[in-house]
Length: 258
Image 1 (cartoon, rainbow, N blue to C red):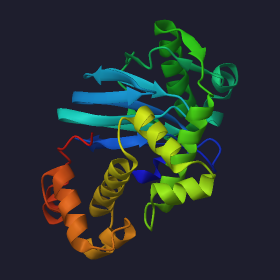
Image 2: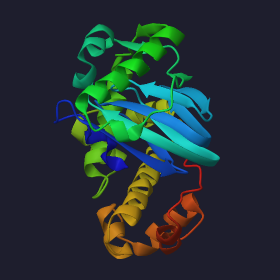
Image 3: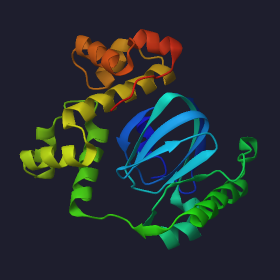
């Protein structure tokens, strides 16, 4: 899941999708567009500080560099589509300085995922979603404030350094900003302390590795920035209400990361 940030950055016309049960993921952003479709259950989605509650047949189109996070409400099954802006070049060119007032809209049709192996069908599918969004909402100028840019820089630093020593002090030195200023700004814009966010980000990545790799729990803990295995187990249980071993067996995440 932590690989979201890299998709759509290096490859032009990249497109892929996957389905997840009971997903949750902390605040992040990326250059790619992202579509979230709820197949079953309910999902709480926050985009640029605006909260949405999605139900079956709801879809959300998240624009490049929009900060977002989501968590399951009781139970959910969702499909996520990640694609590069180049796939919808005309739409991207017209709306790249804008964001939707409301990112959520009613899915106009049930996708036939088996037909989306062709780039032409992919583009047709995506443009249909763009058309539905345009019909249901207005657009406003994207936020390019200095505070938002600083937060982007902090989140990018975490993404690149969460697997090793990573603290707000190192971020402060790297970005050449006052520690107290960054601490206040991060809490104001994410509603979480830096250390809490980092802990949830690391555990989210650990969940991904537990489901998608053969690494041992010790290796996963180390690869997620934990030098103390007891701390890893304690944080993992606090967030997921189950041990890493139990999570690997069941594969579903039930806890709210906020």
